[in-house]
Image 1 (cartoon, helix red, strand yellow):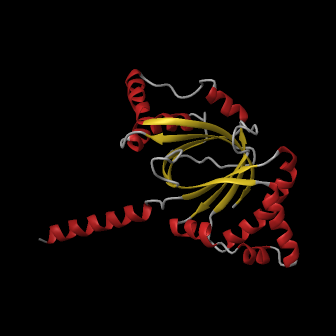
Image 2: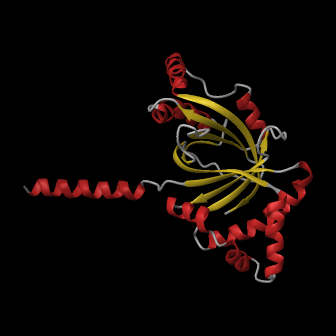
Image 3: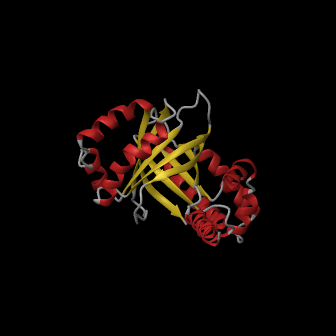
Length: 262
């Protein structure tokens, strides 16, 4: 009986340790921006202004970080030219940000020497400089391990996926993730993440998931695009062939990190 009690206590300790070691999910708000070519310089000034507000949000622990990425292809008929990504510690904080963010209060804290008139002028310039095409609320559900650190100039590929089968996430984690991990370990890419779309959702939603691969620069990205990735054995190739049937790759975008706040 004593042995059983000790064993049970050890199991509880291990479970508690596992719970503590399990990382909290990261929540991400993607905001895709359409910017006319003659508004690019004004738009970047606007994002400089907003970066100060995001620093204030980080200091108040309502967000973990914020990034601005330029996108390619970026022709006027090819969708958005920029995307901002805001990182949140919880779903509640992300939803609160979308529904009831008091930007004027944050701006006054971030820029105490600016008048309300000056702040309103910047908010007006924000509206004129870009069109927020759409917002996508997401949750990170898997990713590779490594010590990759983003810096200005970091490149990414964003694959927008539409799930066709309930096994899709399992396929990404069990078949594709080891292949990406091999490339990360060999220094051929920085990282890979699987992101699930929370909203918008439903049968008419454009995508259900995104996979995002990070690269330290254009040269590393080009190497991946030219086929210098990880090597797959025949068994893995066959599994990949079946795995591709679980999703529809809707679109791929390339991004370059322009601004970052942490």
